[in-house]
Amino acid sequence: MWADYRKRVLFEDDAVLVLDKPVGVSVMGERHESDLVRMAAEAGETLYPAHRIDKVTSGVILFAKDLATHGGLTRQFNKRTVSKAYLAVVSPGGLSGERIDLPLSVGRKNRVRIAAAREAIALDGGTWTVPASAVFDQVPTYPSVTELRVPWQDEERALVVANPLTGRRHQIRVHLAWIGHPIVGDPLFDKAATGRTCLHAWRLSFDHAGQRLTVEAPPDADFPAVDLSLLG
View 1: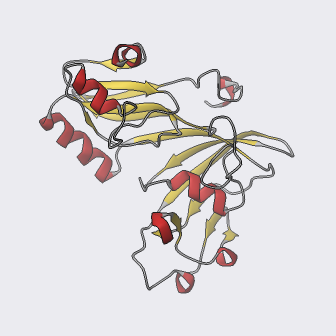
View 2: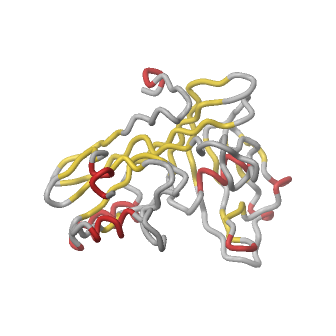
């Protein structure tokens, strides 16, 4: 099975491997055959993920082949020098705003949520935010920022290019849902969702071997049709 995923390699050298992950497979930590790190290990390869994307999310995922390389990559993510761009199809249309600056917290059943009451969220000068006085003070909170660009939308749906400036769990999914534009097919917010979750890790830029490397994965055929010429 690992050989099938290796056909989706976007870039590889002696130190790193960049893979185009399909929907339905976990990066690591799952106790079944859909764990990429585990499948690679069973095939004789040791991989160290430099970051994570959700099981329901497709697209670019970066692995190191040794611990020294892994340390350097994770420092880039921690320092926020890595650039990440995701494609999302959201509903309904009419999306406005260029930035979501909403802190996250973890609620019941380990669910990620905005660390404020929904009614406190407002669009202020192109940024979705909440007053500092409205942020929960009884639980740990985590500053979280997502930049948005909307290349196309109609009355029903919008195509969003989302750039997470922070790397919190479920950040893009929660941010978009809480401003009223959940990702189409996202089971976190639609228990009756069928088909794939329309979130794709499209582009990743990081420093490697003395240069800035950008790796891009066009969406698979199961993602809604996207005119890549609109994305820039």
